[in-house]
Length: 226
Image (cartoon, rainbow, N blue to C red; front, side, top):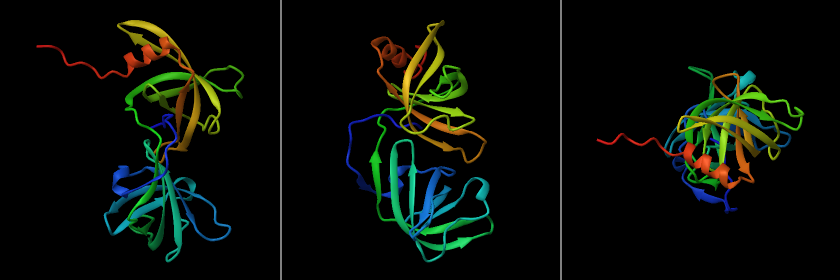
């Protein structure tokens, strides 16, 4: 899920389970030692009050990058919260798969960055980047809300903060309509289960017509009347 623009809020301390983490969710882990670099990782699961399982992601899939007994910092984005927490590496394992067991944190630092619900879709569309000089690049729209969207692409597309243009053709009461929106990149990360990137977008400078179309697109389907 992409992050939506909201009024700035302070970081809160909340329980880990309140994040709603899902298996395969992308994370970043880093040992708290001088010179240590961030490592792309993924969440495998947790047992409350006992431990959190994280493992490697991408080409370094045979190494956790973590050392037993050391402290590490874990960061991630759930689609609703940006979060981080410190934890001790309890054990590392190679079988039945490579992962590290971290001490279960009592609370995590979390910043709420998305409040609106997303409508899941799977629509082919295009984006225009500064670097593409107006040439549309094919992507897939996978969810959309009044404030933003998530697209799937074969590359990271643009750094966080850069503004791009997303173009889509939608159907309103059976009539095709074109929607061209400016959006800033909120985050992007490599998928853990396929060769693709998920790019979160926040819409900018929406017109009243844009808002009307988005409102139509994000309404849940109505049940047929009896």
